[in-house]
Length: 245
Image (cartoon, rainbow, N blue to C red; front, side, top):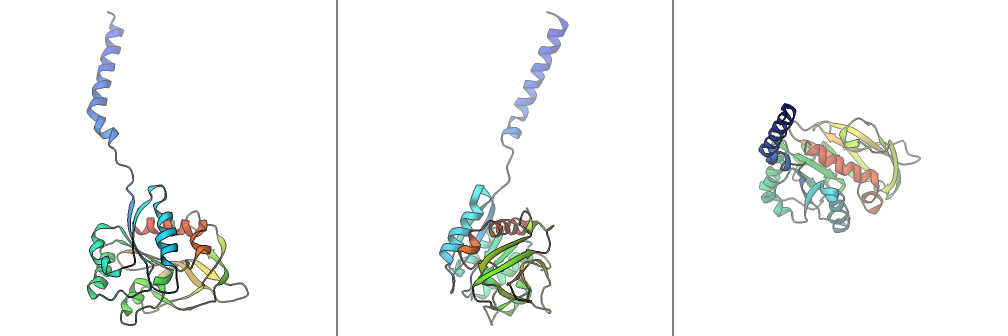
């Protein structure tokens, strides 16, 4: 038996021992966890089941990107906040319970993610001004008649606008999203402008809330937004950024 053979055999034995010792680490290496999302819909003027419960849940759950629970019952929010990474509000029905309102603020104060979709950017609640002032940084009280307009990305370097075309066209309600000068400042990532109009409004934006990550998406009335690639990319990017992943 030659020295070279013994050396080779010893090397092979040591290699087998190393693999056996580290087998658990190699085979059980965790992958990227799906983002846990609670999507809240419900209210008036929109088909929440079709476009939020249906289309948006499908968009977010594609390829294991997120696990999404949808509810149209705001009274269930409170019990679910402890188990999620991102709260996605798409409702314009009341969140009337004071404990739930406080819990939403506490959730964001704890550094968690909040995404505010189309209906949730409205001034929905006169008895809860802190919502628009602090979490939305303003809001909408009107919009153009449903129709065509262009969205232009104004910050192409932000993660929320990654892989989104610089300009895209769609039919939607062009929200008159107005920042509140006394509220949380916003960072505009994309603007909306109708043809022939000189009025430009924020369409995608970050709310500079002191602790959590908050994204506003003014698009989302019906199929013309929920089913197009730019919207779907923005939605997934927004959830990922809000979850700090």
